[in-house]
Amino acid sequence: MANILLADDDAAVRDLVRRALTAEGHTVHVTQDGGEALDYLKTHAAAVDVLVSDVDMPQLDGVSLAREAIALKPKIAVVLMSGFSDQLDRASDLDSRRLASISKPFTLEQIRSLVRVVLA
Image (cartoon, rainbow, N blue to C red):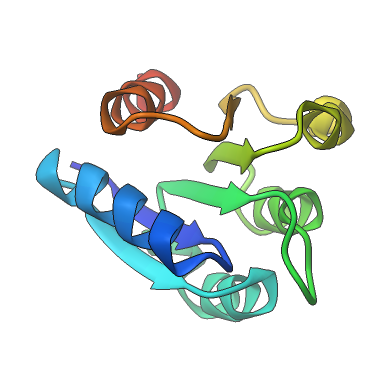
């Protein structure tokens, strides 16, 4: 199973995604915003297989976090979440073959399935 870094400033979303992914057998490290997630990545990038991040967060948004994550670990898989489809369009220039996005709200099975896809 994968080691997943989750970044979202909404506690309810963090809990939903964490529960969905741990139920699949993944290890999930939870952070509250992009800045905290980037700090974690700087010291643990080798151990992170997937970044799951909200796009709209204070300090460091999810697209910028994804850019930093890809720079630190080019083969990292990235899943971006947003309630606004135009925000997801900003990620179109990210250089990653393992990039996916999902619009909020989503179901537990949808996020599980998407993580399976980026890990394949």
